[in-house]
Amino acid sequence: MRTASVRFLHPVAFVLLMATFIFNLASVYASPPPNIILVMPDDVGYGDYACLGNPIMHTPSVDAFKKESLLFTQFHVSPTCSPCRASLMSGRHEFKNGVTHTILERERMSLKTFTLAQMLKSVGYTTGIFGKWHLGDEEAYRPESRGFDEVYIHGGGGIGQTYPGSCGDAPNNTNINPALWHNGKFEKTEGYCTDLFFNQAIEWMNASRTAGKPFFAYIPLNAAHGPHVVPEEYYQQYLGKPGVSEETAKFFGMIENIDTNFGTLLKQLDQWQIADNTLVIYLATDNGGTAGVRIFNAGMRGSKGTPYQGGTRAPCFFRWPVGGIPAGAECDALSAHLDIFPTLAEIVGAKLSDDVKEQVEGHSLLPLLKNPNAEWADRTLVHHVGRWAKGKAAEAKYAKCSIQNSRYTLVNNEELYDLKADPGETTNVIADHPEVVAKLRAAYDQWWNEVQPLLVNENVVAPKMNPLKELYWKQFGGGPDEKLLNRMDPSSPAGEKKPARARKSRKE
Picture 1 (cartoon, rainbow, N blue to C red):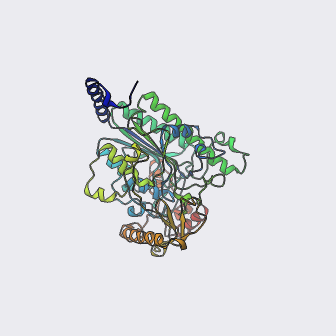
Picture 2 (cartoon, helix red, strand yellow):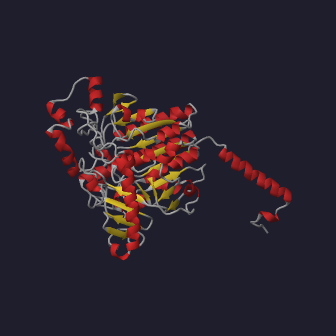
Picture 3 (tube, helix red, strand yellow):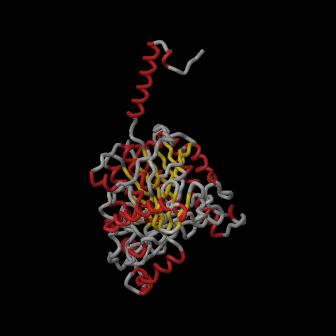
């Protein structure tokens, strides 16, 4: 009869068993540092994946990846684009990086911020970014100045966008055949933007692994952010489905194309035989849902640009076989994008300076990656849409904001929802829980006071021309007409009016 207890083993067999265990354990810790890949689409909602309940979407690669990875189901990001990227790169709330908007210089990540890429470079990683940066287009703020060795991006918050001041892409750019900023100069490309970003990332990863360098590939895509310009063959299958307009079909087509490219990347890791010791993080969106929420929003209230759960909750998948991350598992611990910096720092053994330790306020997820049911202390997360008018920060303290713990969320300082009993945030129970409200308000007041000295971009004087457009014209010739000059110049009537119209039409 076989027993599961080693105490009945022969002493020699026991010694051999323990020796084997110790050898295997030592082998794991002696493994080379993992390659790290972080893929993050733009403007895709929690409910835009088939494996998470969407009845229309076709996402076979992410669906299969879910079975191989650990899914964090109560993971949060920021309500809009630049803020999310700032938190991801820094391990702290976006406002503490000076990022309170997506334009008007308020998208620029503070130059005092020590970035995730710089941290990984400090322990020998080579680093690359492929897609959307959106944390400053001026030279000191661009990714090549913030720790990235390989840079293949568009400018501004979306391909072809123009805003007053420094935030804007190359002139007349589009998702098809875009001009992309590659290691200090523009390249005119042929192809669809998402295909280009993944192809370049795969080519760079191959060169890095061949050279024997551990790599960090950051693939923050511009898709499925508007404008929804996508080749017709990518979205035809969604036309005519219930509730799907042509614009929504294009949005879904952009997501399916991301899924196809993600599957190609995963197959390439298998072919290179490096999948087991590559940590792949698929952070499924950078903010709440957009064009797809009318079809399916996973039972949540709100969308991008709101402080409700639908504006900040995002599925986040982790896969790393050598690291012991369980496959096909889920974790409902309250977690966030600002946890990725400290998680990776612990995994790679980075020694953080005292200043960086003070900067990073997220928590390492490593205990949960090993055991999704590990003890996890409750915490509070603050979500604030920002985007107030210039000079109006004080008045915006309680505008479009929420503070939550694992059970309750206080929205706009006047709505309280019990997320366990009411995940759709339908019933305001603020009158029933005064002690909870008092505790959350006190924590929020403390947080608000902490961020005020760090709002470094609120009164910055903006340049009169988008710097990347200026570099494009310097490289290829040409220049702006009077209309475009006025549009870029924040002091002109056209420049002053543009942000207001942009906010009304869509949140970049």
